[in-house]
Length: 304
Image 1 (tube, rainbow, N blue to C red):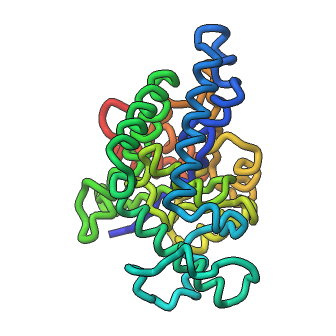
Image 2 (cartoon, one colour; image 1 turned 135 degrees about the vertical axis):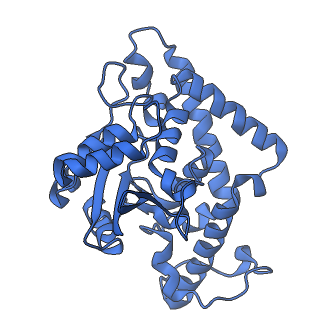
């Protein structure tokens, strides 16, 4: 059978989630008075507090804030595989200079972060914090007209072959004589550790594994896109970039990949709820041909 892979490359802020536009009031202002601006500001600041608290308390952010890396595995070559069960991260002397010893200590932290990410926040937060987080998510989803849950649903539908349908690895879906694989990648302009925490807080951790989270903070989105292209090299690859900013748009154009521009304003064409895998399939077809669009249509859940 032929094998094809759809790689969906997502921006985070103002695409999969809304945060900056809540804090600065621009999201609510676009609704011309039908949404309370101050409510959005307060919601956004509460999310900011949650993110920073979890970053500092559980993901070493105070220690690694000045060591932002583009992805977790970038330090793996320095990891000697030491058992970290009883390792005391608070007393290992991690810090400048950026020599091999401290690179190994940073690699240990990245491995610990990866393990915590895989286990999820329920394994590290107490019940009161989980309750507060869940309530804030529901309040935010309601305030944004289901933006968060709709974006998550779109990710789930894009990855439907990975989770639900048949192949030996559970990571592909067959249609006629073609096997389609689906991959969700996050390329965010935010720093790496807060971006990983945001994935968990906004319930995206089971859809975007830690190895698929890239920070373009230091290197730019074009470099991240180039790494992704090298990582998923092959003859039947299809890439699509979904985001709200000029940088990912220009980087997608440089790679000759389709770009879908997200705009939170109520009158915009691409936003959540609304965007579906079927619609993304039409963007694939512009670059990769009509037959791929039809295959994407077939893979989209009914009702879209």
